[in-house]
Image (cartoon, rainbow, N blue to C red; front, side):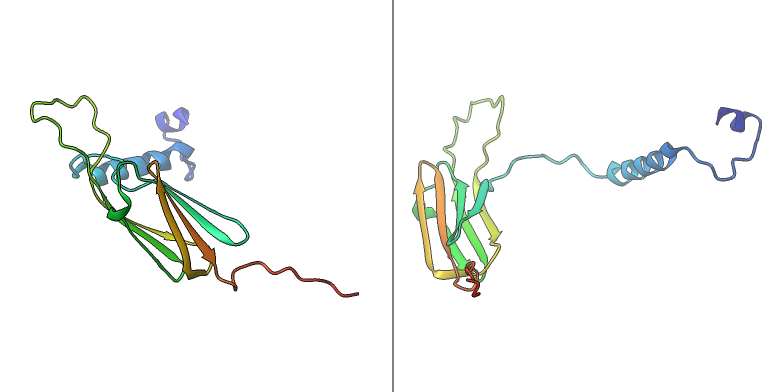
Length: 150
């Protein structure tokens, strides 16, 4: 490679595998040079686990400090929406933060469920900051055991 550059030997379009990556990096740097730095935060969205068994879907969300009457839970089709507000007590105005990771504010989380659900059979329970929602599967979505006749 060095021999070709110094003695003008034609390369016949032979490139280093790193040239394309270098070009892409330059383009990305140019694209993001004009944008001001943005604050990165975890936000207010609750962390969610979605599991299922034969009859139900189970949604568990971490909502520490949120009361049950401050939440709005809606099920439509095969979507579940959780909306609420996380409030954090105000600090003394002379307080200096060394680390601030907890955010306050409203949140709305839409979860797509893997199959059809029965919207009449939804239960929600909030205990120790964990919201547990049990959503019954529709009869169409439940697996059917088929017997073989011989």
